[in-house]
Length: 337
Image (cartoon, rainbow, N blue to C red; front, side, top):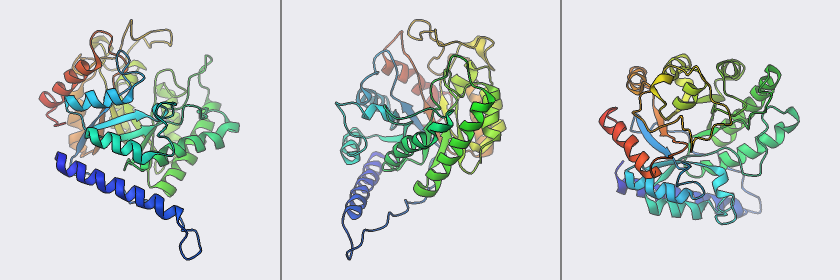
């Protein structure tokens, strides 16, 4: 899709969203109009669409629009952003001004991969049965906001890891909450839920991942596979990609040190400050076999977002790290941005 097509389709989406909002607000024939089912999911023309997450510490933290603007200057056209970024007093886009946010990002020439997670003040205790209703409400509301931008996959983390870790009893509750959330997203929004294993979250290890994947319905719960977090949790991202196949709805791309390739033997704890001692790097460092991963995805005709995410950029501005990765994607993986 060229820039003119992108802006045209973006304008159509904005107009449709505004009309839908107006339609819901206006009674028809004395009756309140029932909510309309969202447009069905579509298959993009490109096999791979490349996104970039704009939360990189070291220059982009606290200002998602700076990350979007500088990422677009590098060549990235799709951005993944944390929903909490728009809950701050100086933005106030969520949940009542989607149109204002659309106008701002469309002027930059970007759209969203997804607006992830829940709100800044919402409940994220997926492991707590008593919190299930509020957790679902928090994350469903963000998915509904994300859907206004045409997003189809909702990436969600599972809350901060407790010092005692995650038990099987916790995982059982988490699986039930994820199933219920994914079912509601599917039925009411036409979206897919992708759970994101993440270091320092309630879902981190191989055992935890396998438990959740075994005890949730593939129809309602998919996977966001992060090459960096999987590697640094001791898992081989290529092996896990093959195991879960097309249940992987989105890949997050980041590299690690070469000695961690195939799954580190030294899982970092929460005490490590990545601005001082990073273990995630721009693509091409050598810790993740990206050519082999792409060859596998090519062979299975997997389609979707390959979303770059770099947690920190301590040695150079985040935009320069983004350029390194963009060059790797285009020159080595032969995927256009």
